[in-house]
Image 1 (tube, rainbow, N blue to C red):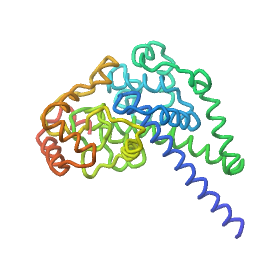
Image 2 (image 1 turned 45 degrees about the vertical axis):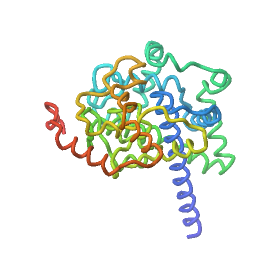
Image 3 (image 1 turned 180 degrees about the vertical axis):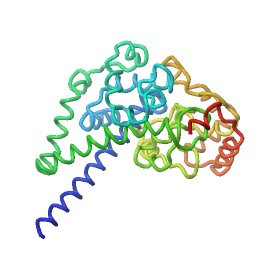
Image 4 (image 1 turned 45 degrees about the horizontal axis):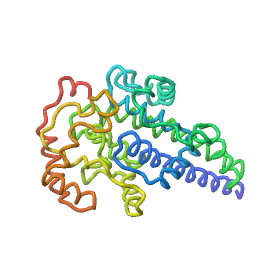
Length: 319
């Protein structure tokens, strides 16, 4: 009985540590690779840049240029021929189970890197160690084993790999383009529940409508965990907001696929974001970024725009 209790206690420790590690990697991916590098929605201080890159190196081994290039190409060809991982093209379960293979295949495409990430070049830190992803993963696993012992440390590393590679990332790319709610007229969907465990990335419809928005939530019922981290880094002087909030455009009557862009500079400066610099909308955006503003009025605008939009041909059939 004592042995059983000990094993149960260790399993709880493994599960909690694996979830915490996965959430750390997910939020670092969302804040740094996605919002800072891929879309330039925020600017990261050099100190925070180094810390976030080290976290990602130890927990994922990802190359930042590859991630950025694949993601920008996804925005350029969303759910059309050329999209590296669209469930609308290859099927939901293929993306859910083999998302990592689709990513790796596109990351090896030199033309994708050249065209979609010309601004993300190797620096001294990359050349010294961060370009060696397997080394980072090996050091991360070794660190876990030193801290928690070989058995628990190895199990935590395995659980984290399973959650990050085969659960969190595929849920964003798979479910995010298959089923859910929509505030805007594009081919992506929101999941308010999954957003809690994907660093806000499952508010995918909002993001595809306004890629440069640093905050992905636009409704009171939506929660973006990565935005809390960004706000904390802003207060510490480690992050500067560049992109405008998505909700500034909600309910303005815009239609069409807001992320249909083919050049990296178009992905960086998505259509519609210039509206944030004009007149009262810019002042409302500034208040919103500080945590103020009439959020209730914004929600009413979003709901009004959602109710009055016309569904695209064939959309109801696809659902």
